[in-house]
Length: 442
Image (tube, rainbow, N blue to C red; front, top):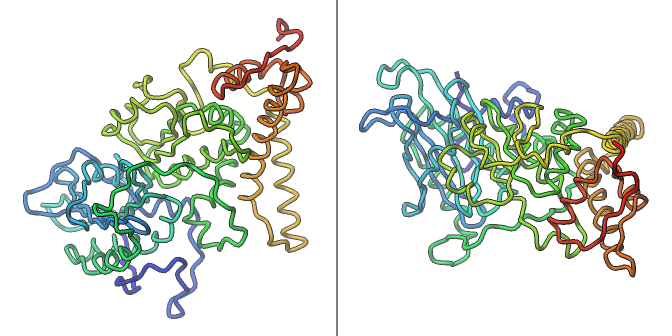
């Protein structure tokens, strides 16, 4: 059973909640626990007329916010129960905020996209003695914003509110107060809509992240992400840099998987000016379901996750399919990239070595000026910068010929990474001649 928080639900949305001295000290939940503490509602279940058996709360915060409560019921289809502003278009959001299969878990959290907005929803499932609700009440409370980078600040508020809605359905005053408070930061744009999708940018790394933030902020999950995939991280890195369409499958809970979407996008970070301006943006779509098929058909590059196994059969929608640690592609020209080569293993060895040195300095020297998130993000950014810097220099030289030595300087294998380099040059429109000796030899 989901327990109702004893914290006051009204206006309870501080960034980092202070400890409650009246409660016994509890260790902060791990990322996996946080993911298991908020979940989605299955899409295709029926709900009785006039009965809100499950509620999804929707709020949109920060800039251009929308406050909404969505109701989900095990007796009928998901439905939007309440929202602010009342005239906002929330078509389909009831399925994005409750992942398919969530009726099997007690709680989850979900990041997703709704047009030009990003959303964060907290889901909870509570047993009830009600035949009408088939013994379970499921609700999600969420917010929409033009950017996902600050949504984590309201995770605690959403968790409290979804539990409050389970215990006291229909009491929306805390959400109304939340919306009235946050809408004050909105610019006077009339309809409050964002005309263009926010561009992907590398944000400044916060070197003083609190432990509480690491639990709920996507940037705090890079360490777990790389530990989960191991050496396969180098395979994902290549696909991300080539701006391929990456789809991650996982059964619920989906919260931690949404973090993997974020981390995949971070693998392609480049800080050199002018690089990547002509290539498709690697968009984080976070959680998707079958209602997003039409949208995905027009996307040239994205990273997303789903609990819908049927997506595996829709190969026209993705280039790379990731199931657990199994990375595969049906594109024949991309299949050589699935094989780890000596250069890939060497890069991963260096990454692991740097991590061990960092952990040692933190333990022995009590160094708090850097963390694993910095290390991982900067490792791949510097790797990408070195590759594009070398390619740019060769392309601008009097002899724009890329030799085996150039490839080694970039940290790649002259032979095993040839197909990757050919794709990279084509995707980024870099005009160099690729000449590598002994191409016939494996």
